[in-house]
Image 1 (cartoon, rainbow, N blue to C red):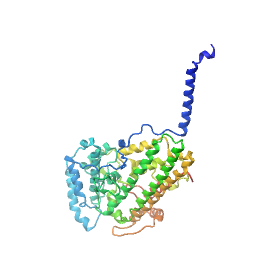
Image 2: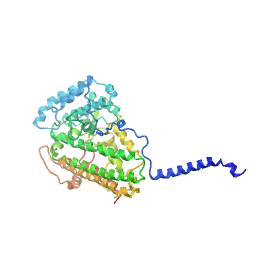
Image 3: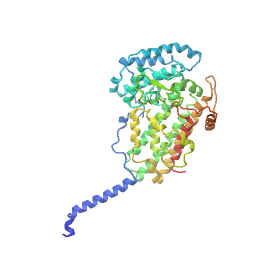
Image 4: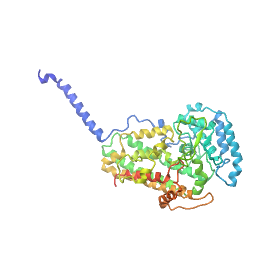
Length: 475
């Protein structure tokens, strides 16, 4: 049989050849420039608003019906229930009221939160109210030498609604900042100038200023989300127009990060470090705040074989900062070979901290971060292979590194130094000496200074800063 009879007719053969050639060409392009995320889910499916980011665009509506008892208890606690460890005359005078307030909670009927599940905002409101009640209850108790029991009237519904929302059954960043905020003028949108907070523990202006600083940083971070979305919406980064846009956006990103750093540093004139450490921070402490060897909390009526995330709220639970880390490919787990090599202290740090903090974010926000992490086109890899993007990428990374430097200074002033004071004393801190002071304290047997969730603060903050520095493309 002749070869010409084996082959298909010329037009058909030519079509097959062209298709094969185009397929190979497309594969080459895909290798160098992966396609953007296909069939991206909308912001709203992740409970992210294009105007307010991770904040609800409108305040959470108050609970009604049988759940009014929760709202009323929270109203009754504000300004009337004091810290159990507070020995001031004012706090001691409030103790009888606190005892009666806690007794009322224990006597409640056990409410089923299931009717709230039909509405996301109602379920979120239930989480916020119950989580605040748990912190008021636990931290108003006299000092304990045994595990603290959270009554089932709080523990069971909080655990149930937390399962529904997909995150931790304890006070979180979402409860204290995202869901606690509301506009001063309800007819106008939530902005850094139009914001107030429904709940405080201490009733101090310092506590309000602390929340406001966090909220301003989150609201400024809405532009970060837009930059990230613009990047993944590009069909490719093979033409000069797209490359120029990415370069501009990376430089814009660096400016946004710098402004967030300024916001964080601006907390100092408005929130006194001593007031924060002694009057505000104790309310935030979670079950493991004193370290892994200390007695924790027991949620009455909840199956104890089920592990519960019960650390306190933390800036590490900011979804904006996690999105930024994912976008810039910051390697907190030390999986990649980058320079400079991790220090011994970096290696000793809690490499699972950032992943664990995501469990304290609302489930829909966690899903947003998972989609972001699954994106096939890393901006760092694209910058490595595109000379025009290397400097803009490094500008953004180094801005984030400087932000984390600022965070270390704030932690030094508000936590490290204040941990060496007494409730009636005040003091200052040379921020550059923070690490030496922590190391000396550890050697002296005083133990490490810990965050509200029980993490060793020195190692954690320094490891995060150093991991950020290692992402830079230039040594």
